[in-house]
Length: 162
Image 1: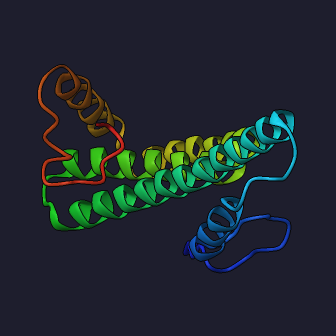
Image 2 (image 1 turned 180 degrees about the horizontal axis):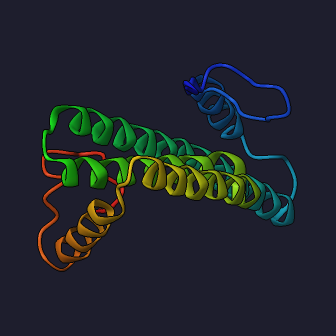
Image 3 (image 1 turned 180 degrees about the vertical axis):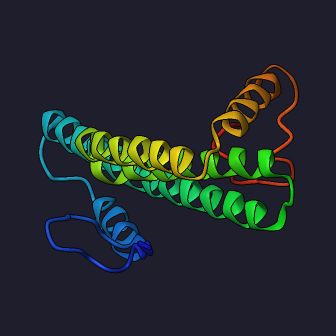
């Protein structure tokens, strides 16, 4: 299982830690450049663009961590429940959170690959364990719960379905 640690830089990635991001933000705000109003406007624009870029980085990290937390929540809840239909629903939601985390981390190409793996895993699991009827019940219950209150994410502060 992949463990996310924002402080570790992985090969091929240009991520920075929160401390580095904060220090970049602090260093951006300095004394204005000498010169006329053109220099001041240019400095303002570049600082504004850099702050927006760094804010996107922080927002991305929060979304990613939220997806991973929600995935963990559904897995923990799935392991505690005895109802087989609820287990399937929780497994499905756990995998959807994993797909969302993969989309945030790897982009659309990684998401497509993970989605095809998920669909294959789902197909094999349903076929091997003879869960066709149970899966239909779970998906029917899932659609009914979307119309009303969401019973599976109760007590979950990190659910992506908010």
